[in-house]
Image (tube, rainbow, N blue to C red):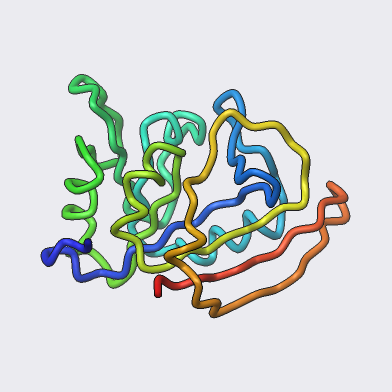
Length: 169
Protein backbone atom coordinates (compact mmCIF):
# COMPACT_ATOMS: atom_id res chain seq x y z
CA UNK A 1 0.00 0.00 0.00
CA UNK A 2 3.08 2.20 -0.10
CA UNK A 3 2.78 5.33 -2.23
CA UNK A 4 5.16 5.22 -5.18
CA UNK A 5 6.19 8.80 -4.38
CA UNK A 6 7.36 7.70 -0.92
CA UNK A 7 10.39 5.48 -1.51
CA UNK A 8 11.73 6.03 1.98
CA UNK A 9 11.40 3.25 4.53
CA UNK A 10 8.50 4.05 6.86
CA UNK A 11 8.95 2.95 10.46
CA UNK A 12 6.90 3.20 13.62
CA UNK A 13 8.42 3.57 17.09
CA UNK A 14 6.11 2.75 20.00
CA UNK A 15 6.08 1.55 23.62
CA UNK A 16 3.04 -0.53 24.54
CA UNK A 17 1.76 -2.98 27.11
CA UNK A 18 1.99 -6.67 26.30
CA UNK A 19 -1.49 -7.30 27.72
CA UNK A 20 -3.58 -5.02 25.52
CA UNK A 21 -1.25 -2.77 23.47
CA UNK A 22 -2.09 0.32 25.55
CA UNK A 23 0.17 3.25 24.66
CA UNK A 24 -1.21 6.23 26.56
CA UNK A 25 -3.64 7.55 29.14
CA UNK A 26 -4.99 11.05 29.59
CA UNK A 27 -2.72 12.48 26.91
CA UNK A 28 0.45 11.07 28.47
CA UNK A 29 2.77 8.15 27.78
CA UNK A 30 2.24 5.17 30.06
CA UNK A 31 5.98 4.69 30.65
CA UNK A 32 9.08 6.81 31.11
CA UNK A 33 11.90 4.30 30.86
CA UNK A 34 15.24 6.09 30.60
CA UNK A 35 17.00 3.53 28.37
CA UNK A 36 13.97 3.34 26.10
CA UNK A 37 13.89 7.13 25.70
CA UNK A 38 17.62 6.97 24.82
CA UNK A 39 16.90 4.27 22.22
CA UNK A 40 14.09 6.38 20.76
CA UNK A 41 16.45 9.34 20.49
CA UNK A 42 19.21 7.25 18.86
CA UNK A 43 16.84 5.61 16.36
CA UNK A 44 15.05 8.80 15.27
CA UNK A 45 17.89 11.36 15.46
CA UNK A 46 18.60 12.92 12.08
CA UNK A 47 15.41 11.55 10.52
CA UNK A 48 11.96 13.06 9.89
CA UNK A 49 9.38 12.30 12.59
CA UNK A 50 5.64 12.38 11.96
CA UNK A 51 3.18 12.83 14.82
CA UNK A 52 -0.34 13.97 15.50
CA UNK A 53 -1.11 17.33 17.06
CA UNK A 54 -1.98 15.84 20.46
CA UNK A 55 1.34 13.99 20.57
CA UNK A 56 3.17 17.18 19.58
CA UNK A 57 1.37 19.14 22.30
CA UNK A 58 2.19 16.47 24.91
CA UNK A 59 5.90 16.80 23.99
CA UNK A 60 5.59 20.57 24.09
CA UNK A 61 8.23 21.44 21.49
CA UNK A 62 9.76 20.17 18.25
CA UNK A 63 12.16 17.28 18.80
CA UNK A 64 15.72 18.51 18.25
CA UNK A 65 17.91 17.21 15.41
CA UNK A 66 14.86 15.89 13.54
CA UNK A 67 12.49 17.29 10.92
CA UNK A 68 9.14 17.45 12.76
CA UNK A 69 5.91 17.00 10.80
CA UNK A 70 2.64 17.45 12.69
CA UNK A 71 -0.65 16.13 11.32
CA UNK A 72 -3.71 18.19 12.19
CA UNK A 73 -7.08 19.02 10.69
CA UNK A 74 -6.97 22.40 12.46
CA UNK A 75 -6.29 24.92 9.68
CA UNK A 76 -5.29 27.54 12.27
CA UNK A 77 -2.63 25.40 14.01
CA UNK A 78 0.75 27.09 13.65
CA UNK A 79 3.97 26.64 15.55
CA UNK A 80 7.62 27.33 14.88
CA UNK A 81 9.99 24.54 13.92
CA UNK A 82 7.50 22.09 12.41
CA UNK A 83 5.90 21.33 9.07
CA UNK A 84 2.11 20.92 9.07
CA UNK A 85 0.22 18.23 7.15
CA UNK A 86 -3.51 17.57 6.89
CA UNK A 87 -3.23 13.78 6.48
CA UNK A 88 -0.83 10.87 6.89
CA UNK A 89 -0.48 10.77 3.11
CA UNK A 90 0.52 14.44 2.96
CA UNK A 91 2.96 13.98 5.85
CA UNK A 92 4.59 10.96 4.19
CA UNK A 93 4.88 12.89 0.94
CA UNK A 94 6.55 15.83 2.72
CA UNK A 95 8.96 13.53 4.56
CA UNK A 96 9.61 11.24 1.59
CA UNK A 97 12.20 13.39 -0.11
CA UNK A 98 14.05 14.23 3.09
CA UNK A 99 15.60 10.94 4.20
CA UNK A 100 15.85 7.21 3.58
CA UNK A 101 13.85 6.42 6.75
CA UNK A 102 10.80 8.22 8.14
CA UNK A 103 9.54 7.63 11.68
CA UNK A 104 5.92 7.79 12.82
CA UNK A 105 5.87 8.45 16.57
CA UNK A 106 2.19 8.67 17.51
CA UNK A 107 -0.43 8.92 18.71
CA UNK A 108 -2.99 6.17 18.41
CA UNK A 109 -4.98 7.52 15.47
CA UNK A 110 -1.82 8.40 13.51
CA UNK A 111 -0.42 4.90 14.12
CA UNK A 112 -3.67 3.42 12.80
CA UNK A 113 -3.51 5.56 9.65
CA UNK A 114 0.23 4.92 9.10
CA UNK A 115 0.28 1.15 9.68
CA UNK A 116 -0.75 0.19 6.10
CA UNK A 117 2.23 2.18 4.76
CA UNK A 118 4.72 0.95 7.35
CA UNK A 119 7.72 -1.26 6.59
CA UNK A 120 9.20 -1.69 10.08
CA UNK A 121 8.13 -1.56 13.73
CA UNK A 122 10.46 -0.67 16.60
CA UNK A 123 8.45 -1.99 19.55
CA UNK A 124 9.04 -1.68 23.27
CA UNK A 125 6.72 -4.27 24.79
CA UNK A 126 6.28 -3.63 28.51
CA UNK A 127 5.10 -6.13 31.12
CA UNK A 128 2.60 -3.90 32.86
CA UNK A 129 -1.03 -3.73 33.89
CA UNK A 130 -1.08 0.04 33.34
CA UNK A 131 -4.49 1.23 32.21
CA UNK A 132 -4.64 3.08 28.95
CA UNK A 133 -7.20 4.97 26.91
CA UNK A 134 -5.19 4.89 23.66
CA UNK A 135 -4.12 1.64 22.00
CA UNK A 136 -1.78 0.54 19.22
CA UNK A 137 -3.57 -1.20 16.32
CA UNK A 138 -3.07 -4.93 15.75
CA UNK A 139 0.11 -5.60 13.82
CA UNK A 140 0.69 -9.30 14.48
CA UNK A 141 -0.44 -10.75 11.13
CA UNK A 142 1.55 -8.37 8.93
CA UNK A 143 4.82 -7.91 10.82
CA UNK A 144 6.29 -11.33 11.54
CA UNK A 145 9.95 -11.04 10.51
CA UNK A 146 11.86 -10.37 13.72
CA UNK A 147 15.18 -8.59 13.12
CA UNK A 148 16.12 -7.71 16.70
CA UNK A 149 15.10 -8.72 20.24
CA UNK A 150 16.54 -7.74 23.60
CA UNK A 151 15.01 -8.51 27.01
CA UNK A 152 15.42 -5.61 29.44
CA UNK A 153 14.71 -4.61 33.04
CA UNK A 154 14.46 -1.04 34.32
CA UNK A 155 15.78 -0.74 37.88
CA UNK A 156 14.15 2.66 38.45
CA UNK A 157 10.58 1.62 37.54
CA UNK A 158 10.87 -2.12 38.20
CA UNK A 159 9.44 -2.82 34.74
CA UNK A 160 10.41 -5.74 32.53
CA UNK A 161 10.28 -4.98 28.84
CA UNK A 162 11.58 -6.21 25.52
CA UNK A 163 12.78 -4.35 22.46
CA UNK A 164 11.54 -6.07 19.32
CA UNK A 165 12.11 -4.87 15.78
CA UNK A 166 9.79 -6.38 13.17
CA UNK A 167 9.54 -6.05 9.42
CA UNK A 168 6.48 -6.48 7.25
CA UNK A 169 6.21 -9.91 5.65
